[in-house]
Every structure is written in structure tokens, then in C-alpha cells.
Length: 311
Image (cartoon, rainbow, N blue to C red; front, side, top):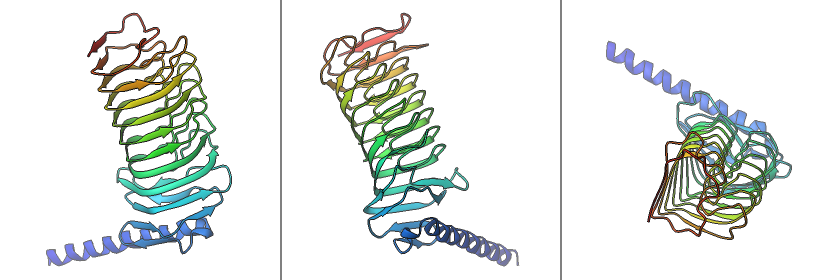
């Protein structure tokens, strides 16, 4: 009797979850009628984009725990863009977005992202591309500000980075893994990072490439200012540097380890190949191990920084 009751409970739970996901799918497509017929739903949690489409700017609610397959199609915004998705429900359930390209005139909401809104949590983006400029502060090319426990793999951001932002994530994010990912574009805002916005922590970047000009003060090709607990491995900064900027880490960042990284590009007055001016705030260490660079590595560090260089 107990086993039958348990079985019936599991069946009822599954049907409830399926109904909830299906109703969410219907709501998702009703949010933007152009998407109707272009997104299919496979129980219990898989959504598939079936064609490329151009839509007005809007945020689509995506249930936490879903898998959204873009199938290498493109969603284009025909106005200044908000993020494409806002994750709803229990954010402790991992959400996955695969093989999707989003093209926009630009990210126009403060703290927003190209694919995902701010406060996103437990997310994997795989083989995703965002094309468009970051126009507002604290924003990220793929994910907005205050995200946590996110992984970005085999992805690309193409666009310019303005106003204290990051090419992949926005500001104040934590537990970030970025692997096999490229950023192509100029940095035109202070304290910005090519990959990660300012004041982020627990950052792991592996086998990534930044290409562009760093044109504003205290910015860098990889990590924004005031970031900490940073590890960058096997990565390349192809950056032309201006105005107290650095090839990898922006001003006031600390507890940094860079291994087998390469910095190329023009070094102008008061810039450096690796670290922006005033790195090492509160820092226990900065370690540069088996890296290739042009001198200077830094222009000015906080005086009590423990700097280690091993070739």
C-alpha cells in the first residue's frame, strides 16, 4: 500500500511539473507573439528554437532548470535591447542555454545583459554569441550584474563596452567560470573589463582571447576593477592600451594569478602589458607565472602588494 501511494505521489508530482512547464511555455510564447510556432517544448524541461527570428525588445521568462537549445539560430532585436531571458522559479536549479546567437543594437537597461538579466544564478551558457554594444553601466554582454555560479563556454561577445561594464558578465558577480571564449570590441568606459565587470570575485578564465582597444582609465582586457580571487590561464590579450589601462586586470584588483598568458598590442604612456594602474588594493598576492609580455608589466602597484613573477 505504501509503495502504491508513493508511486501515485510521484506521478502526481511529475504531472504537476509538466503542467507548470507547459503553461510557462505557453506564457513564454504569448509574451511575444512572433515567437509562437518558433519555440517547441519537449517535456519535462527542454525548449527548442526552430528558426531565426527578429523581434521587438522584450524579456522572456525562462523557468529555472530548463534547457534552451538555440540550434544555431539567431534572435535579433529590432530596437534597443533588454536581456532576452529572465530566469524565474527556483534559481537553485541549473539552467542551460545552448547554441544561440542574439543580435541587438545595444544593451540599454542598466545592469542588464544580452542573454540573461541581472541576478541570474546557476547558469551554463554554451556556444552562445551576442552581437551588440553595452550602452549602460554595470551591464554584461551575456549576463547582467550580480550573477552567481555561472559558466560560459565556447562563447563570443562582439561589441563595444562602455560605462563600468564587462563583455561577458556585469558588475558584482561571483563564482564565474569562462572557458574557450572570445571578446572582440573596444572598451570605452572606466573600470571595465573585457570579460568581467568590476567588483567581481572568484573568477576562473581559461583559454580565452580579448581583442580590441582599451581607451578609458583603469580598465583592462579581462577583469574589471576591484575584482579579487582571479585566476587566468592559457589566455591572450591582444589589446592596444591607453589611459592607465592594462592587458589583463583593471585597477584595484587583487589576489590574482596568471599562468601561461600572453599580452600583445601597443603599450602607451602610463599603461602596461598585464596590470592596470593601482592593482593590488588590499592584496595578499599577484602572481605572474610563465607569461609572455612586453615591459612594463605594471605602471603603479599598491605599495604593499606581494608580487611574484616566474618565467
